[in-house]
Length: 204
Image (cartoon, rainbow, N blue to C red; front, side, top):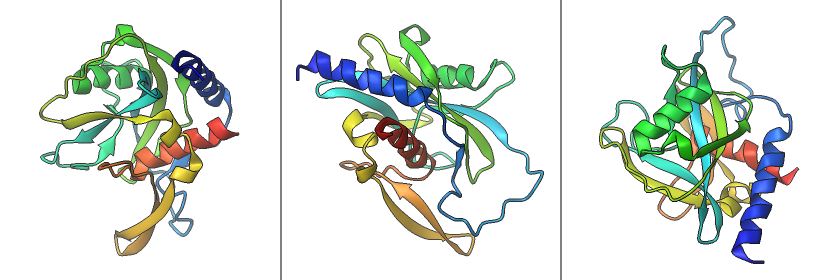
C-alpha cells in the first residue's frame, strides 16, 4: 500500500473511532476496590491527541515533561492542561496549550472530535481532543515545561496488543495502570489509558 493510501485509511479509521460512543474512563478503571468520594470536585482540562503525517503513516505527537516540574516530572503526556478562565471550553484549552507547549499553530489543526472525559488521580476531568495536523510541523518545546517532543506511530498506539497492565504502590495500595512503552519512552498512566480507549474504538 502506498503511503498516501495508508494515511487515508488511518485517517478514516480515526474519524470512525471518534464517532463511536463509549463510557468515560479514569485512572481507577483497573482498580475497582478504590472508592471515590461523592461530591468530589474535578477541575476541567483538555489535552490534544493530534496526529501528523510521518514516514510510515500517521503518528501522534507526544511530549516528555520537564524533570523540573512539580507535577508528573519526566512523564509522557499529550500537550494540554487545565481550562483557564479565558478558555471557552476544553477544546480551546487543548489548542492553546499545544501552541504554548510545542508551538503548534491552531491554523494547522483540524479537530475531529473528542473522546469521553477521563478522570485522573489528581482530580482533573480531562477531555481528549482528537485532531489532525495539516502541513509541516516543526515542534518548539517550551523549555520550562517540555523536555522533548516526539511522535509514536498510529500502528503502535491503536493496537491493544501493545498495551500491558503493570502496578506500583500508591497511597499504601497496589495501583494498576496501562503501559505502552515504545523505544526509550515509557507511556503509562492517564496518557496510556486514553490511548488504550482510542485503540479499542479503532479496533471495534
